[in-house]
Amino acid sequence: HHAGPSLVDLGARLSPAAAVATLRDPAAMRTIAFMPSFWTADGSPEDRELEISALVAALYRDVAPDSSTNTSPTTAPRPASSTGDRSRGAARFAALGCRACHLLEDTTRLASGPDAARLQERRRGPHLGDLGARRDAPFVTAWLRAPRGRMPDLRLDARDARDLAAFLAAPAPAAVFEPANPPAPEAVTAHLRDALLAEGTVEAADATLDRLDSAERLAALGDRLLDRYFCGACHALPE
Image (cartoon, rainbow, N blue to C red):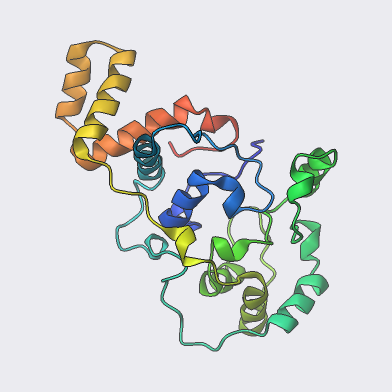
């Protein structure tokens, strides 16, 4: 059992822009964030952005370029259906027993306090108090009508799904979703070459670089960063 959410098929659940924001500052994206921040304040901002771009490239390499998950929640197209009723959504959240698996409260002080272990054990689903920083109401509505993974299908009708989404998905600040700065191809190549040299010979490193285009080099660097930061210790990773 992994402590963190699965990163397999991440593109079906989270936009790349939101993934970038999470990597930059996990605590800013999730109120009860157990994920550590890997970049220190005295590190190079350029290296941080390059590594974030590489990690996202590795995790989203199989996502189609026109996938809706490539649109940030603040700019995703809205369906023509009417918006939901937040008050009714709050009542339905309670009536359906959603708290059995999900927390809503600001639990920042508990994340590192004596109750942290108990909270993590109790929480079967993700914290939803800041869901709007990661997903918009149309996505949440669609998810509630056809959930995947461990979440049960509650067989919600369209009205219940819209009302729950209106309650859970408050608009996120646009600044949260600033994309990663595109890394310079020569910088990606230099970082990947260093990583390849740590694995084998100069000839093998050069041969690998020769057969990869720029996008593949970025994703290949991301694969190695997933190993370097031991991401698999907390998350199920794509093959």
